[in-house]
Length: 198
Length: 198
DNA sequence: ATGAAAATGGACCCGCAAGTACAGAAAAAA
DNA sequence: TTTTTTCTGTACTTGCGGGTCCATTTTCAT
Image (cartoon, rainbow over all chains, first blue to last red; front, side, top):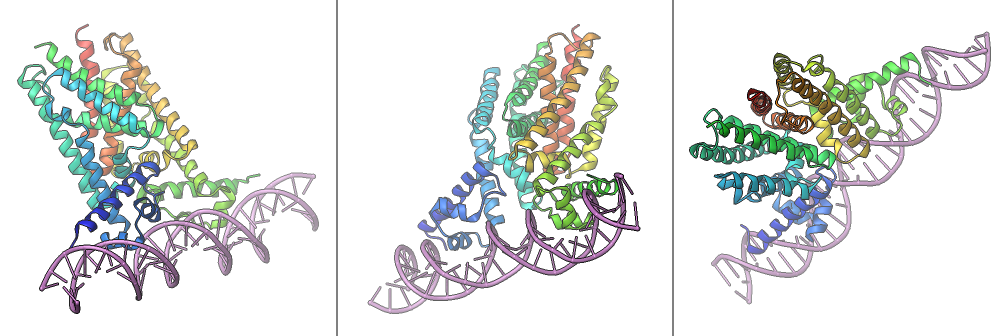
């Protein structure tokens, strides 16, 4: 079915593709480049991804989706105090600032995402999962009475995800993280303000 | 130089390309499709856009950038009362909801924008212009004492643009406008709340 | 009217990158 | 060992689509 060596090769291919895509975008990434970078040939590539490029791209998207959440841990899972929120904010900003123009997930969402149902499902899941964790954080803060009861956790979490996504999109096209920071800070201010009157 | 007939043809080509891109995305749009839709041939296309696809795409981006702002008028230019803000919000949500998956500017920003400097400049301008108008609205509201003096107009405007952008991106990949609405509403709540304590 | 410039039609070229075929090497199973 | 399956290298095919050419028609200036 799949030997250890085979699995390793498969993995190498995915990671090479991911790297290539980060650097040059989906459309500019040629299968040949992927092969070269992973020290494989087309025969391997099509052996492990019989449906070709599309299938490979989806695997890459899966990999990147996992990373997006991972990279925010452990902060994202522990949003139970203002300092935790702040740290999380900083991690997110820093992560995307470092990545600059080359946000892998953004690239995939925008260049691949819309048109294929599988990719669409994947991004849907990612958004949902991300949002759920933010929501949990908000609810925890409500439990502490640090966030006001008038705040709708689900809706606010949705807004925060949108804010981040938009900030990243603008970062990708302008190179500046200002919008991302402003958007995140506004959301945090909103949460903090809601608790003031308690 | 350019006769009336020529200008009309040129325009037809741009609009055909814009339509094609809205429906299928940049990469899936072939020059031949554009020709067919505009009832022209490649010779015309290359006559009016000697640098080929890239140049055409840029022209399309310019067209769409203009529309983005236009479609929000007159509301965007008159953000001087809460009802105006609300109307603006509704127009934005409605516009993008109607467009669904097919946000032309989003497509261009994300699929074309990053890689070519000209397109990057264009999107930069668009963001800036858009943001400036929102900022003017916030400043007007501060003049009325309807928005608190603690609000930084430029930064808040930046956050709102990011929120919209993110909401639209998510709308493009999931088909749901929930995030866009939540993000906009959060921003408006933030503004309103800042005025409460005055 | 007439010559120049602009506009158009349609056939053609050509390079590139996705995908294929097949044979040989390595590994696993027997 | 042998037999079978998985793995890998190489050389090839092929279709698509961006871009070119040139002949012809239309429009415009004078």
